Structures are given as structure tokens and as C-alpha cells.
Image 1: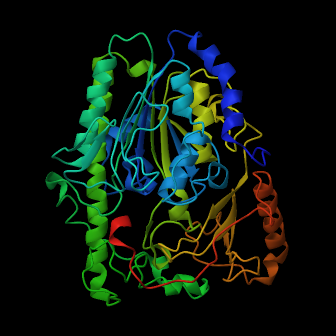
Image 2 (image 1 turned 90 degrees about the horizontal axis):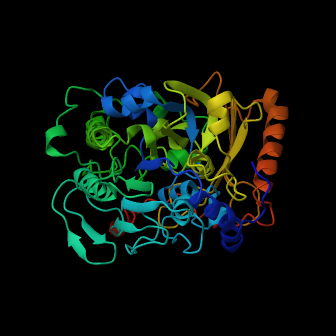
Image 3 (image 1 turned 135 degrees about the vertical axis):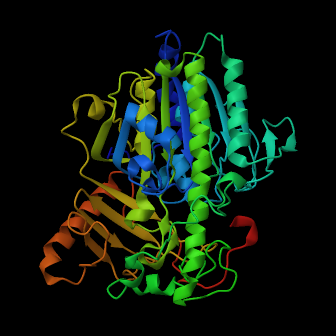
Length: 499
């Protein structure tokens, strides 16, 4: 981690000006950038990451032709904070988008904005979701098309770059791909490279496949994961969450109509939910096929960086939970696949990479030079020649939300082999909940919490010190780490408008 206690927008803008201007007059054959961002996409829901059921041949092809990161993670497992971290290279407390209701600061630097300043044509199509009710164009984009809130799988109302709002009939994934391809076709023959960001709604809840995929997985039985019933050594809040909006006995994003329901036969609702989730991903694979086909037809594939990734992980029954937000593996893990000129093909990267690494890495691939001080670091050297100095530990944080009172404040450290999670209350007093310690090398499923094992006392102290050091390197100390008061797990459903 880079030791930058505070990274202010104005300072970033000033620091960026020099190399942006230099880039604009530099390499005339600068690569294009196609950035495809999915919402709540688990790595194991893709063929190339090992799914035995979800066939994603076109995403798999990108992985075969490029780089697949085996251990990629988000630094806050929540849509808006994670998306802002991808754009800026900063942790949530530094860019300020710490929840799903905060706007991305208008004067905050982003990698698309820097590329725009450097002469790239830039566009954003799809789910943006920073500012729940704001669908207006954002700075740094020549074309910006989004919608309010989560959008709908069918017939979403779009704001077409501030020109008008219009309901476009059809399935979200198809519609957003149509708009992206239409803009790309308009760039043909232009004398400048382009940067296009496509934000899919899929596979975010409420999971609704398009009709041709509605029954694609009817033959696949999906039980609750074994860890859903291994909760004896877990903190009490996890058991309290079981029957809530984010628990396996709750409504399951409307797939279960009568709840809570802990009867064994009610697992059918869970199975139907997972089938729906998988079905939406098949359409994303179709979208990738169309985009790649267009690049081939226009002879731009070999001069285009393609990034395919998810914004955060997703719990599908692990430890009895659904949704995300926690520091457990299913909540943290994301897929990242990069196909780019000059990068190796078929490479599988075991090192831990983070959402905050995307911005500096992509700017380097585009020839923009080093990014101003951020918390992430470029993985270009790591991919091309290896990097002995690459991180072996990092920290995760999440702040309790009164709108979704199902997860406490979280502060956690993950090393290559171990994870320590603690739950500060938010008022400066000792932790409210039992901490967690996992030996990831021998227990990747986090089945046994070792926090009470006397043999781990020294290790816990070491990990606590590492967590404090990593947080302080980004400006978070006991004096500066502000978080809401943990009001406890509550049973009430969230407001309909924000689900």
C-alpha cells in the first residue's frame, strides 16, 4: 500500500495535468480500452473460473487469450464504494463514496477522465450507481447513458446523455450492448483512440434471465452450502442474520414469498434464486461475444485492451448468508480478466490484486505513465516479468448501513494464507462482536474460526498490528477512522426503492 494519508481531488488534478498533456501528443497508435463491469459477479459462476454448470465460452476465450487473476478482491464489498475505487485507485474513505447513497465527487479524478484529458474519446453505458437518484451525465465522458438506481432487467428508463429520458424496450443486457456498439461504430475512422465502459446490471438481484435462458438450469440441484450449518464458532450476528433480507431463511430477493422459512424443503427457493442468477450471466456472455466480434470485424481487436470484471463478490448461502458486505471469501472475491496488447496469453496470476489496482494499471497499459498518488499499484510489471515486491497483505473495510442493518462495521486483514476479521462498534469502545481468524491455506472455505485457539495468540497480535499498519498507510488511524454506530442486526426489510 502507498503511504498517502490524504489524497485530495485538487491535488490529483494538478498532478495529472503534465502527463495527460504528454500522452495526448505521444504514441499515435495508443490502444483502445473496452471495460466491461458486471454487478455482484462471483468468479465461480464463470466457466474459466471453474463453474461446472455455467457455460461462458466467450468470456473463457478472453481468459485463454489474456490474463486471469486467480486471487482478485474488492476493498469494500458494496456496489458504489467498489466502483469508485475502480475508477480512482483509492480506498472508500479517501474517495468518499462509502455507501450506495453517496455521489462520486464531481472533481475527483478517474482513469477515464485522465484518458479523456489525454485525447481519448470516452463513453459510459449502463449501470453507474453512484448517486441513487442521479442519472445525469458525469464529467470526463463524451457520451454518458445511465438510469436511476438499480435499473430493471426489462424496459429500463434511460437518461440519454441529458438529452432526454426514454424507456427502451427489451432486455437490459441486450439494450446496453446495442447502445455501446452504436457508439463504437461512430468512432470508426476517428483519429483518436477510445475508452468505453459498459456497466451491466447482471447478475445483480432481482435475478431475471431473458426468456431463452429461463430454464437453462432446471436440471441442476443446488443445496445450501455446508458452511450454512457450521455456525457454532461464528459471531452471533451471523446467526441473527439467517432470517433477514440477507439470510438464507429470508425472502431471497423475492424468490421466497413466505418467510422466514427454515424448513429443509424450502431450499427449492434458494435453488430457484441461484438458477436465476446463473441465467443472467449467459446473456452477459452473449454480450461479450458481440463486442469481440465487432472488434474482429473492424480489425481493432489486437489494438484494444479488454477488461472483464465484477465490482464485488456475492454470498450464495456461505455461512447462511446472501448478498455481500462481509469480509468472508465469497463476499470479497471478484473475477478480473484482461486481454491486452503486450500481455501474455493464457496466464494465471496467483498474487493478490485489488480493485484499487485497476486505475494505475490501465493508465500504464495506455501509455499514460504513473498515476498520481493512490492506494493501488500497477500490476503490469507483475504480469510481464514478475514483481518480488508485490503485496502479501491488504486490508478490507465496510461501514454499517442503517438502510441495510444486517452487517456490522468490518475491519479485516487478509494475507496470502490468513485472515483476521474484527467488528468495531463505531463509538470507540471495544469490539461488539466475536472476531474471526481463518487459516486460508488449509481452510479456504472458512469453516473453522480459530479466534479462541490459545495457540494462535501470537498470530492474532501480529495480524492486528498488520491491520493497523495497512490502515494507517491510507490515513486510517483510531483518531481518523470514522464509522457509524453499529445498531445491531434488524429484521425489517429495506425500503422497496433501494433494494
